[in-house]
Length: 565
Image 1 (cartoon, rainbow, N blue to C red):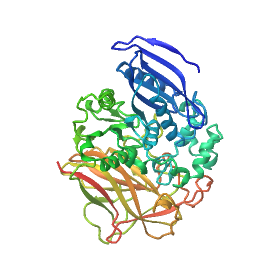
Image 2 (cartoon, helix red, strand yellow):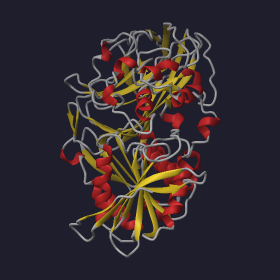
Image 3 (spheres, one colour):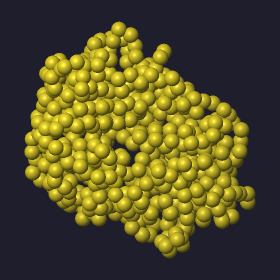
Image 4 (cartoon, rainbow, N blue to C red):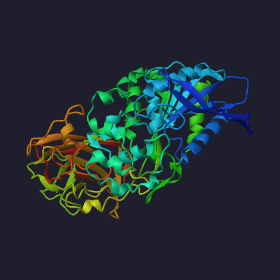
């Protein structure tokens, strides 16, 4: 075992000892590698564990190193472990597989170390939040609490597939993560590479012959390959305090929302404050800036998250009664108003769920069309129709610095397309707060045997700026569930439900609430070829005629959670 031992002068109470490449042996004999930061002392301390596949990404280890030194100075042992097959850890990295038992075995190893007092917490963001949950549902001995930041849900719900559609930037993620060490995304011309067909050979375009990519394309439904990685069907096993953190523009928000809501509904009333939820006006990289694109959310948008994390661990690993569990368990940022709100629950108690129905005289195409949105149930109205051409898909407007990152970006340019249906309220005469889960019920038909429908919610300013709030897609073959692909019957009306996750936004007086409907959001999702062919092999693209119905028999609507003010 190669160990690098040295001391760093501590400005507070402890000098810090660092030990690199300390090995832990897993149940199958594979040795994983860890970096350990601990106070130099004869005493035992609580331990914080994070497990990552990203330690060799430039800048990422520096952030982990800073975090580790911070907690070590405050009387914690902090462990950074490379996931199986990454950096100095043995084995082969197989995303979403093996992490559950590797985490469990690592926590058991921690319990027997001379510097461990037996109280263990975990922390991490994104994949490092997902693998916390995968382990926690196994109830490892000694695990007392978690800080879960932008947690991924079960894989088939969000990545690499979302409601049946392939999250196409995962091709870049695959290429970055494939080897023992990680590659910088800057080496790839990803915007152009994602146009490549067939998808089965896109890994070659990124420089790999990838078994990861092959597995993903061979398993596009909720089959046994994915079910063995699921943790959200086991959340009833979680009885420890958890700090849940995410952002309204986090591409994985649904993981945080489901986890917090499910556990909060399963625990006793006296433990409600042991689950805490924080959602800010942030992207996947939380709490980085008060401004995203053109929108400034104000000085309060950035919080002292490191202090909150320290207080959380102090309370649940050291037993310090610092009051963090005495406050209301939900803190969410209301965009538009740009203020934090504290609540007992999320969704908020006494939320009124009001259906806003779409209407038109059959010409809702583009923001120049006649589409409207209001609470009146439609009468006998003609359907809206557009042509979806996968060779010319609607391009989603994403963060130019992060190909998959959403933000409050102006959508007005794509809303001028004729293959985007636009429905909006009249100019609001009074403010409306929409906070909570949002769902869209669509009645549709297509002349294809499979196609997609995409829905977006925006806040339209008096200037015409159409601020993105949330979006999602449904691959119609999976409209009845993710386990089985069921083709459409061409031109037959069917119901599709699109989960728009959750949002908190104050629509101000003079603004409009807008819904966009189309059939693509490229390159966030792969283009549906409209042919019903396998996702891995299709090359031929076919146009599809899409219809959206809104009449008394088929009243399409978006269900908005309205908060009385």
